[in-house]
Image 1 (cartoon, helix red, strand yellow):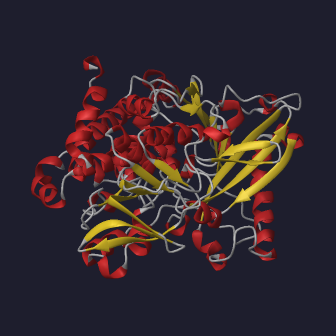
Image 2: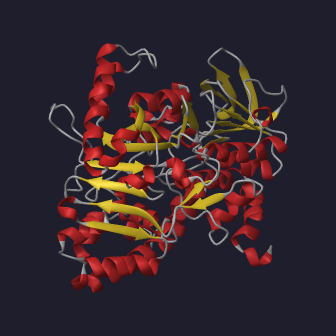
Image 3: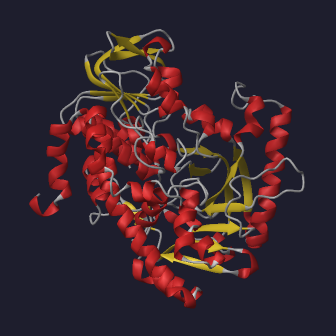
Length: 535
């Protein structure tokens, strides 16, 4: 790991002319910046938080470290295109550890459990064993997943073309993908099987994009399933190493990353982006600007009202946000593996109803219908628990953003006693369910800290605390303006809103943004990575 004084970011940056300014250092922004750096561009990355990385950053409390958004990532090995690109962008400095032969465990009511393994054949065998009368349906499901993923290449190709050309070619580029983007996961499962429990299990990973089966596009679900078909991985040394390695690539090419650097708005002159004005009034100029700060935030906050093309702004702002969430960060002392913790993620469902998208906690007796649990310290082979055996855990569940909206605008850590009382109450209720499933962990718990949608807004600034950007419904894929190239000259979007949900979805969005901005040079850079035999 690099020393702190080797970090490729600081509160200041060299005073020079920049080729590109990238707003936001989440996975999308870092990816776009790193690819542009590989193309010889001088890139300034601006991050409002005091540490870069967006949902890939980590933090410390007392004796424990947690990652805020990296729980499992697929397709990071040399066998996958995204993995080869990521490896090149990090100079091979970012290493990955497998979560194991089984990377995920689902626990449902009535004692029904099933594991998701790191290979397609065993995955199917697990499903055959659980549902012996549904072999034909299971085979058809995997066939639909395969065809959907293949068809999505046309969709993403259409996203990097200029809007007019994309519209003209859409009958050709979108013919195959629309069969999957326009259908919900529920509609596909209803065609495949009548077994209600098999539908629930096949839909189990919808939590990775936040839209339940009746709403989520089958295309996003198929992408998530495919993403993990060969297992899941975790960055060695923690998620903070993602920013360290990617932003080092930016710095090595003459660029830099500024933290605590909040952009007030994008400067638009003669219909083109020419730089940014910071909150303190400083103006920074560049030839091009990339906003990785969420599409809705870009349209509604960063682009001056008089410069927003009406159709574009209305179309982007019409997209609902994905769900908000709470996350309980736990610090343990002891051998948590003896109590059932492991590197694999664990999903605890209290119901077979997968349409329960968010925990309505307004009733004092209500408990979360779903807990997603992760143990970062057990995933990282470099973690040293020490003689006290210090370990970390996280619990995530979806909640209605509206339940926290009354405190919006209040200061972080200073939201008042009513807010703190609510956090304590939610913590107690989440732990009640958690310890029901893992009672052996209760005497080892030493620290518990809850983040809310307002915490997410404070640090990452997504619209309505959304964990996955805009919602992943069929309407998302029909929206012609969720693309890297905006109607404003020299202004591009990056991140999950122009890619897909999750960390690697944002990575894909960052990749598309770089290709849209520098098509010839970017494709020349990517070609040998896409065809490794020619490298």
